[in-house]
Image 1: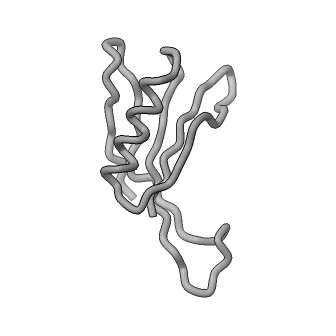
Image 2: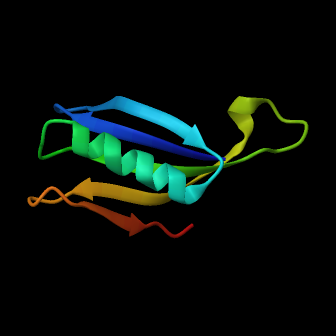
Length: 85
């Protein structure tokens, strides 16, 4: 499963729109749309997290790995940067 999250910052990161999808490309599209819908801000960013279901573990203990960090440039384009584990 892939989670996408948008964060705004006013001195501290605040969670904005978020969601989940079974596909990485779908999550990237949803994150891109959510970032473009918000008012441009200098500290607007998002991330894509891969969530792995660990058998026998509670949902809060499942493995998580941030795989993309996204920002909006001055032209309004969303830029994705791959994160290595």
